[in-house]
Each structure stands twice: as C-alpha cells, then as structure tokens.
Amino acid sequence: MNVPLYKQIYKSILNQITRGELSKGQKVPSEQELAEKFKVSRITSKKALDLLAQNEIIERVQGKGSFVLHSVDLPTSQLNRANIENEGNRILKIGLVITDLSDSYGIELMKAIEHNISKSGAHMIVKFTHEMIENEEKAITELLQAGVEGMIVLPIHGEHYNPKILELVLQNYPIVLVDRYLRGIQASSVSTNNMKAAKEATEYLISLEHEKIAYITLPYDGTTVLEDRMKGFQLAHTEQGIPLNPNYLFTNNACELAYKPTMKHELNKELNKIKQFIKENPEITAFVVCRHSFAEILIYVLESMGKNVPEDYSIICFDSPIATIDKPQFTHIHQKEDKLGEKAVKLVIEQLAGDTDIQTEFIDFELIEGISTGKMKNL
Image (cartoon, rainbow, N blue to C red):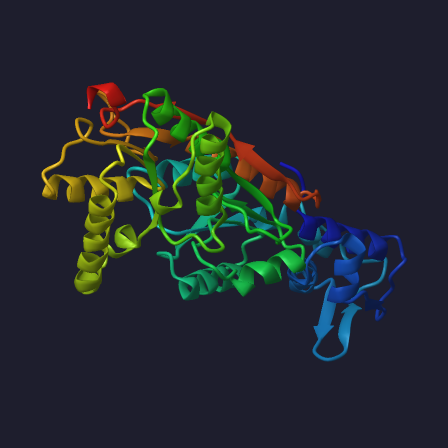
C-alpha cells in the first residue's frame, strides 16, 4: 500500500535531520507550514510531528514550536525506532461514519468497505449516526480522537451541511463521501447515478403504458440523492413527451417516523396524508417511490383502502432486500453497494498516498423486476 501523507512528512523531516539540514536545537517547521508545503490538513501535519516527538527525534514545546533533539549523529537505536515503515507495526486506521443499516440498503455497503479496507492492510472503525446531525458531529470528533488517518462518510439527509465535514474538507483531510455528494462542497464522492436511475425507473412504468404516475419522496431540501431522483422523474416525462402534473409530486415523512415509537401520533398523521393524496388523485395508476421502506408503507396504506398491487397500482422503488428464490416484492433500482464501497476505499487510500484531486464518481445500477408492477391495460 502507498505511504500515507503523515508518514511522507515524517520521512522528509527525518531525512533533513540525518542529512544535517536540521541540526540539534533547530526549530522544525510548524504544523501550519508543513500543511501548506505538503498541501495537507493540520491534522495530518500534527500527526507527523507527534510521531517524531514520540520517537524522541524532536521536542514539542507548547507556545514555542518543535525543536530537533539530536543532530546528524542520531543514535542508531533511535534511527531504527524512527523508521517509519516499521513504526512498531502500526496499522493504518480508516473511519466509517454511516447512518443506519437495513436489509434493503447499507449492510452490503458496509461489508464492501470493510472488506476493501482490510484487503489494503488497514483497520476500520465504525460510527453510526442514525440520521442525527449531532451524532454525526460526535462520530467524526471521536474518530479523529481515535487517530484515524482518513474517513469515509455517508452524510445524513438534511438541508444543512455538517460543519465538521466542511472543516475536514477545508483542511484537506483525506475524506470521501459515499452514497451522496454535498452540493457546493469540494469533496471526493462516490454515489449511484440517481438522476439516471429515477429516469429509467419512470420510463419503465411508461413502457407499461402508465402515464398518470406519482412520485413519493421524503423532504429533500439540500439532499442531493433525493433531489437528483426527483429531477430524473421529471426528465423522463419531458423526454417521453408526457405532461407532468405538479400535484403528483408528493412529499411525506412517514418512513422516517415509522421506526420511532414515540412518534406514533405524528406517523398516523403522515399516513392519513398519503390516503388523502390517493383519494384526491384517483386517476393515478403508478408510483415511483424514493426508498424501499416508503414503498412498504405505501402498500400498507393502499391495502388499508382495499386496493391491491399490482392489480390496482404499480410501484417501483429504490433498493430492496435480496430475493433468493422468487422475484423480489418490488420492482426496484438495485444500487451496486459492492462497487460503491470498493471505489470509496480506493479514493480515500489514494488521498492518503498524496492524491489531492477531487473526484466525483457515479456508479451504475440495475433495474430488477419484481411483482409490484403490471401493464396499464391489465389494470
């Protein structure tokens, strides 16, 4: 595996000492100076200086700086101990910040990330955020305190960016966003091509002769995944020459509340809104749904109204548990979690090796037919 950035800084300073360019008592460049020279974060330059101090090569004096403890005749024992490649068999640590896991999405992604991190010879430390920004901030802080050299983050949905993520990006800390990107923030990311996927899902329903198609989504302000899926739905109508009724774009929060026992009253209100939406738009024959858990809720509501899928309505969604025997319950967009995880690890390791280029990668997907869709003429 390529040498991480902090190790490159460590070696550079050590070489300057052994060549006599830095002598005993001389001041070593500061964290800020090293960060600017090597185009890294201060977190990375601090790690290099801390390791030099730990190996008694330099002394760090608070408020004054760091100073060389030994001149060119550095004792052999200390030179050996200072060899960055051995470094006491130190193992690279990479942090993973992830929201929640489900059998429809997340588990395979985490498995893929762990597999590829292990294959690289590093260790993974995982923190869960449960879609709460305060948990995300805490997770990032704790991972930094644990000494992770790089981070893979699946950001929470929301209108506002986590300042901790922005801080790491501005410091050139090795970080890769997975599953979604943050608009306006220059950070490497790996995600599904959600606009293309939603467009293809909508076009699939159109090929089944549906034209009165509704789109059901969570509130999506600031969440690029949900925004891009909405755009894909709209684009399919435009390209197919089918007028899009703005009333068919329905935002609801039921699937976020379904797993919160204390929010049962609020959940029932959201479920009633879905029922009302269906009653007010009886001409609708199909739905594109932003998430698998939302598709399950939609079926529950339709059945409570005496309706059946796909006899009365067709549903296509994003993600679904793997069907081992028969067709899956839902026709769905299958995101290739193994490829997402593999690419995210590759990018963060490239950053650790010194590649500072910002990369935005879109991974392809697959539309898998289930038993939730049928032709309009058969309805």
